[in-house]
Image (cartoon, rainbow, N blue to C red):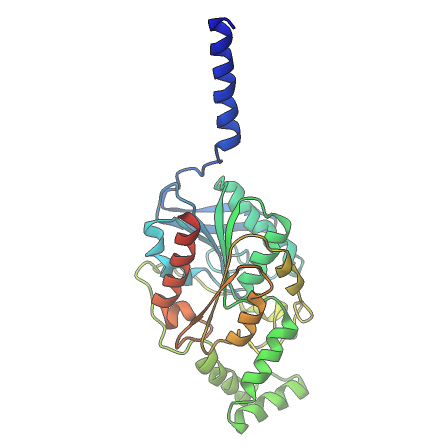
Length: 317
């Protein structure tokens, strides 16, 4: 074999090694905010932290909520950029009341738009409450590049959610139960007694502690109650909207990447239920957040941050 042939062979081996052993890297992400055009308007996104380590893409709850709770992941952003955005119609994104835009598949495409705009090759996907349903829907359609998935206080099924709510309501004072029963029987949800019952339920199973505003949370960001009422209903425990019959639990069985489930000790997404759902994914981790309701990032932020950080560290090491 001639010297030229040897050099050529070594060159081919080097190229082959690069092709088969290298992994696509993410671009260096800078801390910033921006707007992206999607069907129906523009969605706002923010990046907290910077670098080229695997970022976390966060999906907020609602529907019609905002992403502001994810400022509470600021410690994690010291290592991994945290990306969050307001779904179209709420927060800092364009607001609307166009019901033709309130389709699950269009929310999925908004997530895809963020991923494409930021040129993410690999990322962790985190969804809270309704955002967990959206995360699972996105994974079902676009699994490529998702290194791990995190379901925080997850909603995947309206029948399961309302059954859990019924269990929790059964333990409330009789006066609260009666107010809810009458309102749902008559389909009248604007009475003072129903509104009071809703507030009482929220104090036990929603946000149990006084709201703690993160120092980074400085922008005025408003939820969209029209979207919440149209897609879900008048309260967390009464589903009358387009998601009334939604159920995507079977898709959990098709998840083949590392998964973390977290939920509050007193969450609307009951720990017993969430733990059971976590068993549908082989090797999934379940963590109950002590002394927390549905807003666990407010009620016990350190415990949620610790669970997420440990999950990510385990994947990275």
